[in-house]
Image (tube, rainbow, N blue to C red; front, side):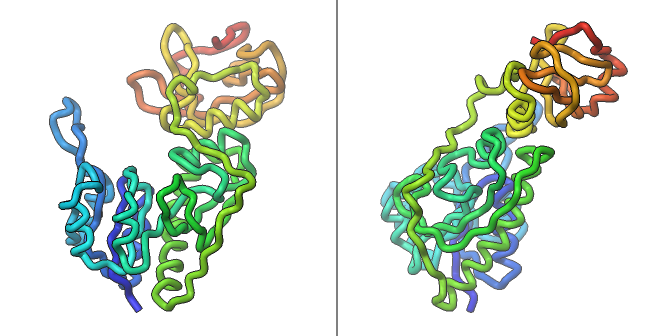
Length: 307
């Protein structure tokens, strides 16, 4: 039985879930997303969110309220008479009145294995902290920060060659399938909820750009996970020839030396323990490139040392 849904989401992570819900026959009464922001080369053009672009193509009404707390916004939300709301990286807090409005409540797709990594940046933090796995969970929302009862989950291994964008894309697709299954269970009255454990709670704070500078004194795997957890944005960086260079992808390598020491002509860099080899990088104001292409224009050889 198809449901009448309100969809609430903003970035490209959210789009696969919206499309999957539509393809499985659910009626999307309205899409809520963040308001367009200035963009373009001169910042004069307003750029709609990826979710708004997808909703417009589907012919679904799009709303971009600045607040969900006004009486007018609440009345408008209630008027859609939705069975449920599906929330995927919307970026705004839902007040209790909104949570209570749909017949069956509001369901959030969260990109972590709750209660680990509640909060804003679960994908980045899982990689940066060396987690062996991540996943997606469907949670019935309450007023807490990702504290609601969990309905369904899927797990995914994190490998050392996986960057934040790699994990983002895989979890986005995995989550879309999971939410479709959750809504099918909800429609037939079979969606079971379980309270989150109070053990193992961690918070995925928003990434601060001050965290992005690479600390070569750390062990090689920690350096690799730091780099991959921030790739492509904001990008872990070093200074090279008085310019900031983002390191976007690397691998563990053999070798040792003083932290930051260049060990060969293939961008192998010593860490506090072990070494990494840089595979992909980006100079300020330039496009990302493979290390082999970078080295043709900027020779980096021993005895250089990266700050």
